[in-house]
Image (cartoon, rainbow, N blue to C red; front, side, top):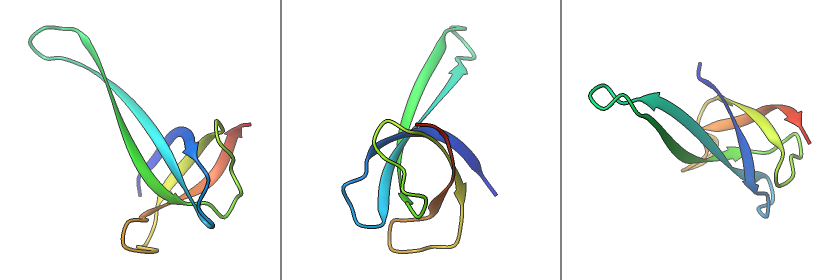
Length: 76
């Protein structure tokens, strides 16, 4: 199971939220640190609000796009 940490961008939906996860990696040729971000549509049963730092975990498909759920709110 994947566990990722990110920031809640939007919580306007009834039972879902959008979480942005940033990852950084070192380019193999240029040796520069590259930052990438990806948005995940997640189930929001914990009631996380915008700008909360959360941990999301992979789960069974809850809908067509929702494949992750919020398991922990790290920082409000």
